[in-house]
Amino acid sequence: MPTLYSQAASNVRKTFILMAFFLVLIIAIGWLFSQIYGDPVFLYIAVAISFTQSFVSYYYSDKIALAMNGAHPIEKKDDPELYRIVENLAMTSGLPMPKIYIIDEMQPNAFATGRDEKHAVVAVTRGLMERLDKSELEGVIAHELSHIKNKDILLSTVVVVLVGVIALISDFFLRMSFWGMGSKSRDDNNNSSGAVLMVLGIIAAILAPLAAALIQLAISRKREFLADASGALMTRYPEGLASALQKISGDPTPMRSANTSTAHLFISSPFKGKKGTSWFATLFMTHPPVEQRIQALIGMKI
Image 1 (cartoon, rainbow, N blue to C red):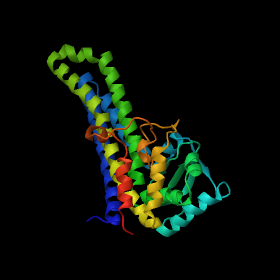
Image 2: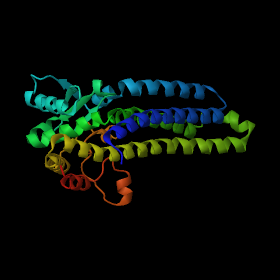
Image 3: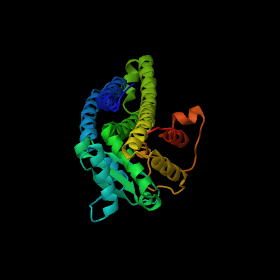
Image 4: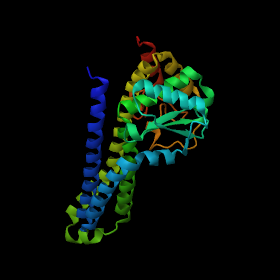
């Protein structure tokens, strides 16, 4: 049975494997379109984008995620109670004190980000602080600190940049395909092979962001169960987190800054409204059903 330590080490390995996979995927798409249009410049651009996005995703993905959600930092004097809760739980878990950010949204929610324990951030919404009691807030903070402790904040945050880059590149190549830019010379030389390559290019451009999104969702669902369990162990009170999840999931308040790129970071999906419980609907959910998470927490023996 995997331990929290083995899971943390696995998350580090997965991060770099994932970065390598996306790097190769972008280069492969660039090579394919270089073949389609008979111009190596597409390959050169893809190589440059691949290495740039790998660097940016590792060092700046947390800042991008925070900016996309309108989060801003606070100090102890701004909210002493929140600061003390984070500080006490960080000491309990043996973590350095993370930076605290506030999101000016009334939907109760939270997420953690950063590339490692020394560069970690816990971001909470105004709604979370106003609508949860102390034990529930501690449960949520412990959940987010568990993401830091389990070393999955880098993995989940890096995905924000990687999936976004894949989507942009795929959209660019699709537009070129439909506009037919540069395809005449290829068609004049070899109509059949050019047509085949064009079809393959369009298929690759369509499937690449879909595959990236599925990876994003699978990573999120798995990590939430682990963070729930380890967060409950941290507070020794799983009922607090279970109650918080019930309140968060049942709150209908929309989040203005919610977007598909960062939705998987939050403790609960920031998109409110349509829900599904079929296996197909579950496949495309950023989070496991809250009922399953609450049931697992209530069943814990501490």
